[in-house]
Amino acid sequence: MKFAKMTEVAHYAPSQVITNDDLAEIMDTNDEWISSRTGIKSRHITYDENTSDLCIKIVKSLLEKSNYSPESIDFLIVATISPDSLMPTTATITQGKTGLVNAFAFDMQAACSGFVYALSLGEKLIASGRYQRGIIIGAETHSKTLDWNDRSTAVLFGDGAGGVLLEAATSQHFLAEKLQADGIKGTALASKSFYPKSPYSKKFEHNEKLLMDGRSVFDFAVREVPQNILATLELAGIEPNEIDYYLPHQANIRIIDKWPKKLKVDRDKFLVNLEHYGNTSAASIPILLSEAIESGTLSFGSGQTVLMTGFGGGLTWGSLIIKL
Ligand code: ACO
Image (tube, rainbow, N blue to C red; front, side, top):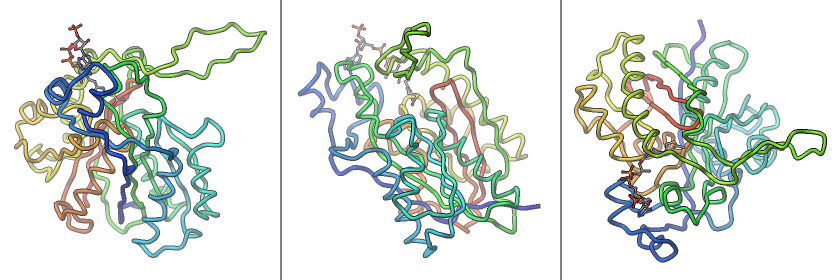
């Protein structure tokens, strides 16, 4: 039996910080509304970078930290819903610019569950025994896709990236997972579509901006995610309190605050940094992990057990339980 483990993590956020007060200067909103409804105080918004620029920083940082050569990486998966382009993918642009000449590379779209989905897939690639080493990145430049005239969505999101180095291991680190999807409810979160405009095809209706039924996404997250977490814990044979830290997708503090009560665990077990980042979709969990490693709260090789849980567009959601 083959196993995989995370051995390094890195994150990057554009240097430009936009506060709630800054947003109030360009749209009809205010710090009180945004803070009390979401917990967000500021977010990083890129001035001139595309998603691959963020990914390149992550790859370089992971290679530097690990001392591995670019040639030694077998695959690169980028989870994003704000790619540079549909083709070439953000992953291949990144691969080409970082010298990962032996890596296959592709993007994965699972919205805010993207990193959890991609990490799960990366683990299977290594557990298959065919690949030794891969990089999994969650990266977004949401600022280029948002409708800045729509205050109900523009205030929620931020730009950033995070990623991990995944390597073959001699013991089990990925203890359990449960990934889910419900396409029937997919219209609750929808963004620009690339539908054909051929004169020979039916023209489909499509929206040019992010549309979100905030209330139904909120209710979905509060209802479904704890059930998913409990199901994942049951698969691992672990009690909720035995998890050292929960790393939830950072969408809204009011959503996260409801989960500890449902799981009957200490609120301090849930790591949070959305105050300074907003919702960075696929990037939120690896940024959170990277900050927790930097601060010493978590460390690779410690034997700590963490549960990552993502949820978002699709609808998609899912959890992974990982021993560090
Ligand atoms: N500033 C000021 N007022 C605003 C703003 C704003 N930025 N945005 C909306 N409003 C107003 C609306 O116009 C509306 O006014 P009205 O009542 O006069 O019509 C009112 O505020 C809406 O308030 P509520 O319905 O009470 O807002 P709610 O408490 O539902 O909060 C929110 C909205 C924050 C979007 C919440 O529903 C939410 O967080 N939902 C989940 C969204 C989410 O997590 N999305 C991301 C997950 S998926 C992914 O990450 C891709």
